[in-house]
Length: 53
Image (cartoon, rainbow, N blue to C red; front, side):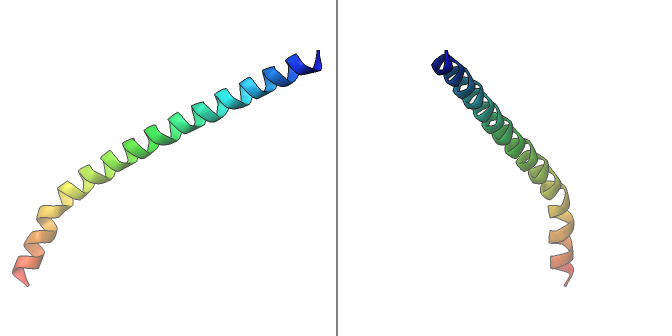
């Protein structure tokens, strides 16, 4: 009885850790894409200011 309860708890913990890892990876990808898009928009402005100096 106690063994099956421990197995259930370990299964839930493993599922939660796997889910958190997937959410972490997806969040990193989304943030990297947003940061890349914002740096692409600001890059021509920065390069123009460097050329004018």
